[in-house]
Length: 382
Length: 209
Image (cartoon, rainbow over all chains, first blue to last red; front, side, top):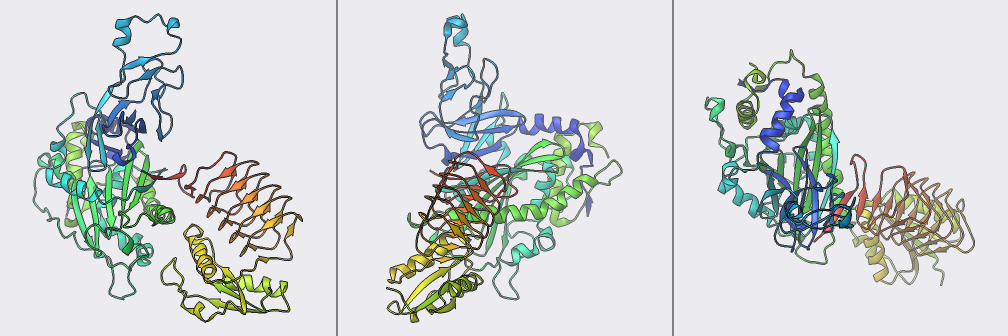
C-alpha cells in the first residue's frame, strides 16, 4: 500500500485548478470530438477546453481545423451551437473568416470601420494544432504544442485508431454536469474494484444467467502491475494513457449478430486517454467515450458519446438502441455520482491522502505525475 | 366482417389492460388473451401466435413503448403481414369529437380527451388523462404518457414517445423517433431522433454521417 501524492487541495482549490488549466488543458493534447462529424464542408462542433472557446471545423470535409471561437471584433462566439454546418460568420456583426486558415475574409458595412488593407490582412482567428487518430480528434491550445508522440505512445495510438475504425456511422451525444472534481472521476474509472459494490445490480442484468457468470474483477489482463517504488518525478506522460482489458460474461444482445464486432464478446475494453477520457467498449458491440471537463474544482461537465459497432446491413436501425444505451449509461454514471459527490463534499484540510493498493497503481501514478508537474512546491503539500 | 373472437396478443401486463377494455366494448364477443414470452428484452417470441386463425379471429397487439415503440411496431407488422384484421381498444370513458380519425390497433385509455379534427394513426397508445387538442396529428406507433397534453394543430412523428405530464405547445412539430421524457412545456419544434431524457442538461442528439 502507499499514499497518494495528492491531498485535498488537488480536488478543492481554485488556485490548483487554475494551474491545471494552464499546465494540462491549455498545454497538452485534449480529446475534442469525432472526426466523423466533420465529413461535410463547413461542418463544425464547438467545445470549451481550458476555459477557451474553440470551434473545430472543416473547409472541405477532409481537412480538420481548430480555431478560437471568438470573433476578432467583439470576441463574440462565431458558432453558438454545439454542432452544425455553417461557415465561420460571426452572428453579431457578420464578420466572416476563411475556414482554411481563419483569416478575415469580409465584413458587412465596411465603410463604418475605416479598416485599412494592412489592418484587415492582420486580422484572423487564433488557430490551434489538431491531430486526428482514426475518428478521434485531439487539439492542443499551446503556442508551441508538445509532440503528440510524447503524450501518447505509438502502440496506444494504433490501438485507439483500430478501435475507432469499428464505429458505426450513427452516434449519440449529450452532456450534463456533476458535482465533483474531474480527477475523482478519472480515478474512479481506473478503479475497477468499485464495480461489484456500486454497480452490482446494473451489471447483473447484462450477465448470462449462469451462477458463475460475473465481471472479472482481477487486474486487467494486459496491464502489468507496477509495484516499483519509482519516485513520482519518474512517471512519464505517455504511460498515463493505456489500455486495460477485463473479462465480462454477457448475454447475447439483440444486435450482437447485426454488427461487425471489435475483438471478442467476453472482453470489456478500456482505453484511458490522458487527461480526462475513458474510451471503452463492452464486448466490442458498442463504444462509449466519456470525457470529464473541469468547470470549477467542485463541478465537472460530463460529455458522453455512444456508438454501436458498425452495422452489417444498412437496413438495421440503431436509433432505439442508442437511446437505450444513453439511458443505461446515465444510470451507471448516476450510481457513481452519488458516491463521488459525497467524497468531494467530505474532503477538507484534515483529510488524509488516499491510501492505494497495488491494483490502483495507475491511479497513484497519475497522482505522481500531477503532483510533479501541476502542483507547485507549496501546494504539493506533504 | 366482424370476427367472433378477438385475440389480445402481446406482453404482460398490457394484454390484460386491453382485454378488460375490449370485454367492456364487445360483451358479445369472445376476448382471448395470449401473452408472448420475450426472446430478449425487446423481441417477443411469435411462435405461440402460429395457432391463431385469421379467418375466425381479429387481433389487438398490446405492448408498451419499449425500444422507442419498435417492439410494438414489429408485433403489429408481423401480424398484419399474416393477414389479420385489427381492432381498436378505446375506453368507453374516453371522449372524442365526432370527426376524429383513429387508425387500427390504437389504444385509448380512460379519461383521454381528443378534440375536433384530430388524427391518431395506427398502433399508437394514449394513456390515461391524455388531452389531444383540435387538429393535432399523432403519427403511427406513438406513445403518449398519462396526462400529457398535445396542443392545437401539433404533429407528433411516428414512433415517438411523449412522457407523462409533458405539455406540447400549440402548433409544435415533433419529428419521428423522438422521446420527450423531461416534464415541462415544449414550445419549439423538435427535430427527428432527438431525445430529452432525465438527467441530461440538453437533448441527446442522434447523428448519422
